[in-house]
Image 1 (spheres, one colour):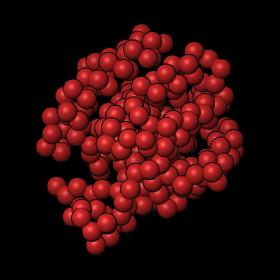
Image 2 (cartoon, one colour; image 1 turned 45 degrees about the horizontal axis):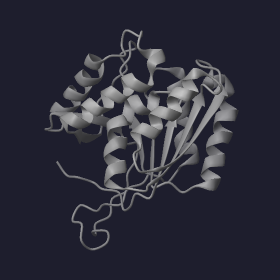
Image 3 (cartoon, helix red, strand yellow; image 1 turned 135 degrees about the vertical axis):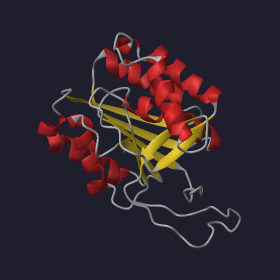
Image 4 (cartoon, rainbow, N blue to C red; image 1 turned 120 degrees about the horizontal axis):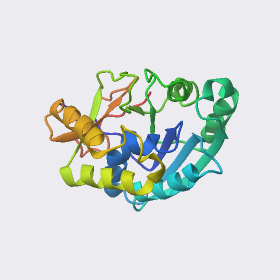
Length: 228
């Protein structure tokens, strides 16, 4: 299995329809990337939850999941479950981010996600960030919409345990959900680990990627350039 690495990782953009989407879908990946690239500049946009307990939880959680990073979190007030109706506001928010930033990596929901809010955001991303490497995370839920992922980031057991602990610590409002527990998060990570010859992993969908035949920087034999 060939490793494809981005040319650089100075700036990341994180996108979520709801508070907790980013951490559930990519919390382990964020911990690994931030520790491997100290000082990375991260902007996070969440479409719903502004002015509520959920916003407070999200700000504390994302700070915990991005150690050593420079973090800017924007939480909007679109109504939960009604993002498709507010398509224009969501699109304008993404366009505003694009005018102010040039991320090396975009992490957001997957376009096949059955939840209407997740799917709407995912469909907007490539209309604004057209030439960017984009990873679409997955969230296990009752719709049964999991598809076969195309990219994996193996997680050591301590990293997965840390992710699960941080989810429980920071998203107290979700603890009574039947799916929000250790077994759910660890079970999906174990399945994805099996699929990439690791114990645990987080998986992503990559819509489009450009490969370079020459190593980037002259020293990394797997330094492929990638972009959406």
